[in-house]
Image 1 (spheres, rainbow, N blue to C red):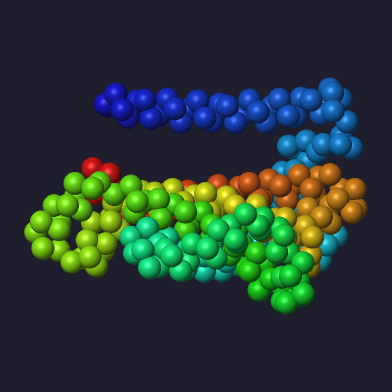
Image 2: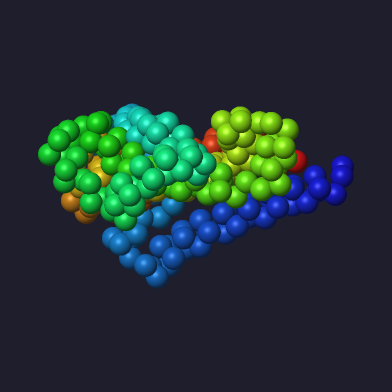
Length: 261
């Protein structure tokens, strides 16, 4: 076994031990009444409720799986739409001055607006269903997608651009064959930032207006004074976000491996 492999295994073990210590500490502060059980559910209670909610629909009318699927549908729709529009727009703004001149004023007006500020308009226009949540997530993910794509193009090594021009490459060829590959690491960095913003905004939107989803589950727990339900919803939000980020990270490794070498 090589040293890098040993180091990787050691780091994995450290991470596992850290998590175990965290959950043991959490359980102990409940067991010894340091924090009242009425204010914080223990890990054991959350795990028990997790298995119950896999099949039970009480008290809010849906299973945990159903809430997770609804949140994922809303997140994926808004996130993918933001990437489809944001990444090409950011890349084009970074290279083509005309596109930058046309899009930048509008983008600079929209960029400072917090995603949650769109919630009232989204409810007025689309109600409290899938479309309104996707609309909010779209704006939450759009900004990071555009900024990182734009920055990635602007950070392209000027030497590569000059070399391409010297060999007779056109403006479009330089953009597509030099700038876009060079920008990929920054683009995928933006995907991670956009994902975090989108997922956070989704939960905020579901807390305000929803009839299903993980944010709705947390809100029901708050109204019913069920702290175990609140913690379960928070745990599922975190776990689902970690899994999505892991998938994005794996895709990034495969697509930009050649660029980073």
